[in-house]
Structures are given as C-alpha cells and as structure tokens.
Image 1 (cartoon, rainbow, N blue to C red):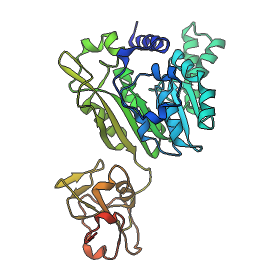
Image 2 (image 1 turned 120 degrees about the vertical axis):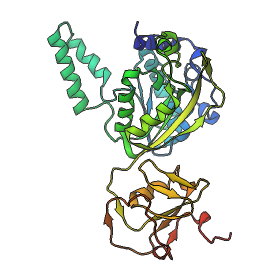
Image 3 (image 1 turned 180 degrees about the vertical axis):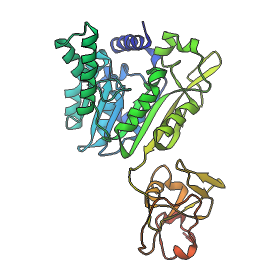
Image 4 (image 1 turned 90 degrees about the horizontal axis):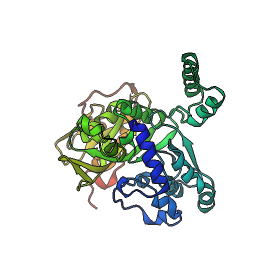
Length: 373
C-alpha cells in the first residue's frame, strides 16, 4: 500500500468512526459550531481554525475539506454574496459532508457550499468527470492510457475544476502534510494559480522543527497520521514565498509540540500570505514611513524601509502596505497634489524629501507625525 492509499484508507475509517489520533486540540469559534450537526463536528480532523480569516463576500476554497466542518463554519461568515468550495479525494468524507448540505443550506439561508472531488495538488483535474469518462473508456492498454492522459490535459485546460485567479481565500486544515514530497511544489503552485491577485491564504498545518529523515517518512502510520509528511518550518515559508506570495508569515504558532518523535518536535501553525496584485508599478508620489521597532525592514520584493524615514514607493506597493498585515507598522502618506506618473518600480532605498510630502494626507492618522491626541 502506497502513502496515498494509506491516507485514503485512514480517513475513510475516520469518516465512519472518530479517530482521536488524527487531530490536535483546537479552540474553534463556538458560535459557529452551534448549528452544525454533531456528526460533522465529531468526525472532523484538524490542527487549527482557518475560518477565522474568512471575510464577508469571500469565495473560499477549503483544501481537504473532510467532513465539511470548516466549510459550514465559513458559510456563516461570507454572507449571501460569498461562496464556499470544498475539495477532497475521499469518497466517504465527501458523502459525509454532502449528507448535510440541504440541512445546512436551510440554516444559513442559501446553498452557498459545494463539495468537489479532486486532488489538492492538481486543482485543475475534475476527478468525478474523469471517473465518469473511465466508465465508458476503460484503460487496458498503453494506447488507452495515452488517451486518458490526453483527456485529462484537455479537461484541465478547457474546464479546470478550480479556475485561475478565482478564489479570494484559500484555507486548509492539517491536510497539506498528506501530499507526497514529490508533489508539494505542485501543490503550492496550484494554490498560487487559483488565488485571485490580492487574495489571501490561511493554511493551518503541522510543521517540524527539523528535517524529517526518510525512514520516518516511509512509516505509513506516521505519514497518514499527519506527522512524517510535515513541512519543515523554514521550508514551508520559503516554498510559498518562492511561489510568488508576499507577506508570508506564521500568524499562529503552537508553543507546545503536538507530538515529539525521535526528538523532532511537530507542532500546529497557521501560515498566512497574500498574492500580489498583477499590475504595473507606477510612481505617483506615494510615501511610507516605517514606524519601528526594528531599525530596518525589507519586504519580499526588496524594498527597504529604515525606521522613521520617508521612503518612496510605487502605488501598488503603497496599496499593499496600507492593508493587513502591514498597516499597523507603516505611516502611509498619499501625494498632496497630482504629479506626472513615472512608470516602473521605485528603486529600493529611495527617500522622498519632506518638501514633496508637505500638506499630504496621512492615512494612518493615529500615527501621524505631530499628532497630539
């Protein structure tokens, strides 16, 4: 039995009978659990609460949606204009989540949740469609296998399960670690592909403090138990940053390890990040002041912000810094008068003379220089 089969088997068992070893203690938002069926709560397995990052109107994608608990929690937060998409490969978990779909639609006011069968490392492939195609086109030869691969490629390109740039928030709860090491890069790339420019991710997962040796990775019980497939803590940050995300950080970090195996600490953490807007940089005179406490910070694009100095930034960077998670660290100064836009990014380390920012609009008024109250 390979790792993928071991995972499917273990979570099928978890869909039929609760498996205590598959979950960490988590303090979920109790008010969102009140209307959920007990079976969904009982047979959910996770290590964090990514529903805390959901905003009204969001299109939310839950990777490895399992019993549907996080999806149904998020459905109470997105409102009438939002939508929740759960993706899972386990038939028993999908059946459990779909079992209560009509009941939950009545409770939240509309049917804003859907569950799709797919691999989280290949969000373009519609597995339900593929299985339907295979019933009429069984694979018994090399030529038929080639036909299947051609069908998969065409389907993924023409009608992907999750479209490019279509999701406001990608969430996941203790599932990324179940993807093989060989497919983790593809997994992160797929998350980047489906996230809208300006969209966010909130990934609750298990991370390790050290590199996990191969013999532990080959232990199928440890792997299917969300342990030996964990990202190493620095590796996870780097992989999402290299995929193109910005503001990559651990927003939640469990001080106490969930488990310790051969001296390696495995703990729950929630990684958050933003997909940068895909627009050209234009210098229109925007300025920011980094308020501290560090003497200098550098963002993911190489912009340098010495503490207390008026630094020139392009409009795109300015719009990033005035929002979460940066806004509490920067004083944002909009141009006082219109000026001729200069195409291109502002060179790193460029100061904006005070003479150019007089009478400007300090949008972070609580930190405005000279504020007395």
